[in-house]
Image (cartoon, rainbow, N blue to C red; front, side, top):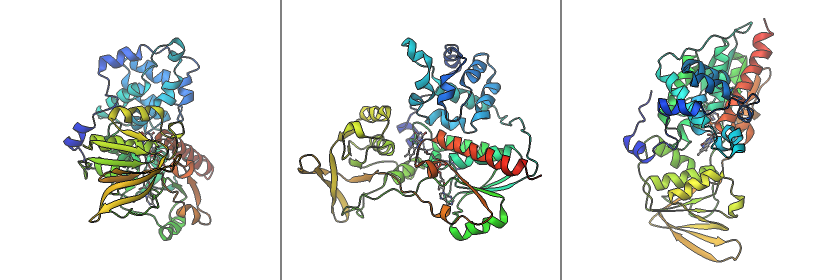
Length: 412
Ligand SMILES: Cc1cc2nc3c(=O)[nH]c(=O)nc-3n(C[C@H](O)[C@H](O)[C@H](O)COP(=O)(O)OP(=O)(O)OC[C@H]3O[C@@H](n4cnc5c(N)ncnc54)[C@H](O)[C@@H]3O)c2cc1C
């Protein structure tokens, strides 16, 4: 596994929801009411049997607890850290009805899977294999493809994952905020998927020409390409040194390439990615970080708790303002010239870095070059336009079950 453990980054980005100690996990597990209708399970896109895994934790059946989670979601370890539980399982917890704190399902799930991965025995019980072994290619190695690949491998199929970047894991490795999931933990989960028999080939970008050869090599293909590049602002000055798009900024610090940010940073946009970049800039040493958004606070797309987190980190918000041009001197950013959309007043925010975070494009080129007899499946951000890790995992699993059912079971 690549050594990404940078002590400086680890120091600056401590866990947002630290791991439970054994005793804490036991106390929390015993608070659960084990509801028969489990609204938490319903709220989870992968439908993890939450009462069942928590009951097993409470009785110290740690392996049983982990297997219950993995049965529904092979990427339960990363989901336990990155899921917006406030609006999913924990948001649905019945404890809210009694004005009590919801069960900390995410942290309990993390505890169960951390114990499982540390145990050294990560073998899963075998599943009935298909009538014939299929050859399946998964393009992209993000959560959608990893889930699809792992589920197929568990059913005896031969799966190869192609990843354009040097490291596997997609945005789990390169995008999600470090204080939720670091690249090391993301890669540990990638290794777990490999241990199920999945082959992963990094540094192999699949272009249309290569894709057309797949028809001869594979029975089915799953496309888990994610979204494309970040959108540009389309204003003068974007080529100046100091303009870094949010995904690049985040990937650089997560892989240890960037250990600091300049004193003054402006992030343009108000989605979750913008918030993550702004909070990270503060953690990397910027004194003055503002976020610029052309609409109002009520219209921002970031989750409420992400917004609160950024405010807590000291990020300032400027609503109803949009960028006009990036000012520079000697090729470097010196400020962002803006206009208030309600009054038309212009103003300049002095800064050394501008981080555009106004969304990612959709790269569907491969989908369009889909060929002849080859059956193509797709899921994750590519098809849902950009949601959460758990949605990608659910898509990948659904695709795997469909591939298995359509070809593995019926073509004996
Ligand atoms: C900054 C940021 C923070 C986020 N934070 C959270 C969070 O806290 N919680 C949460 O649940 N979700 C979060 N998300 C969303 C989540 O990361 C995505 O929904 C999820 O990763 C989508 O998975 P995926 O497999 O569809 O795509 P990705 O994770 O994007 O993976 C796609 C992979 O395909 C590869 N690829 C693309 N084209 C090719 C090709 N032609 N050949 C080979 N490989 C290719 C890419 O390199 C990439 O590795 C965040 C997203 C961003 C951008």
